[in-house]
Length: 371
Image 1 (cartoon, rainbow, N blue to C red):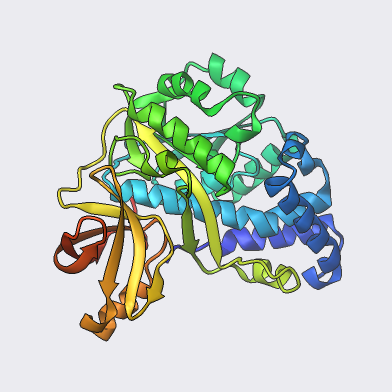
Image 2 (cartoon, one colour):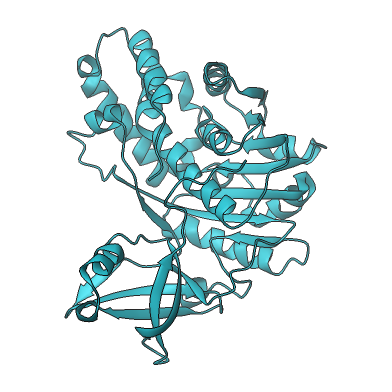
């Protein structure tokens, strides 16, 4: 399981004590809870408010750092570890561009997984970039910060980057996602990869799926995730469900403390993502699929859906009665977003009747470090 570094939790705890003039989170718990709720509403209900720079408010900044920063870090960790698992290799010196970097959670997650990285962080918030610079110094990371509008700066920038990440930031701009295609193509190095993370909401996820279809039809770009194929997105075609990740992790103590009266599912992080580059990922030779639904139990069987590398969404049934306890326990640990491969015997694809048994989970549930 991927971990949130204690050094980052300690940094935000110390920062909060100084900014809010307290000796413990309990002294400012009510204020922090109110600010967490306010930020949560902006992220999900009042997204137009995100165009305002809330990092100028110390209370909102501390609430973000303790509650949302760790979740941003772990989401980016899941994505970069999947890209590494699928065969992406960083150069000896890796340049990372973070568009809409905020306080740098996504940048730091990438830098922890990729050795010898240099970060260029672009954001319109000076307070956020100041925090990012301070944390980068604490982590001994090379970092440049740019206080500018994302779209205007990226249209002018002439540099090439090995990794470009945009975490919950592109949908906050005044341009559509597909308008970014040429910009990313220009900014990516020949072996570079772009990682786009967005909320798991239907609207934002389907916007990402539509952009994904455009990327799939672009001869100069290749999909690295979440898809295992270049055909049109089957979920977007169906229009009923949407592609997103549901990942379990161990939340840090400070986040769990602040959640005591909020009752959020902080042990689960949900998000959508898109990854693409100028070179293709390593092909998965076996028939494989990505889990795109919860794993449910019905009459002794496990039921779930998967998006296969054949370009279709399939429904699966695994008979629990015919499995050993160890295998049943493994299935119960599968998550939405896991990539699985299988061999003939025992598992049924409902609409076709072809038998398969899930053989091995190959998603990045364990840490992969690019050396």
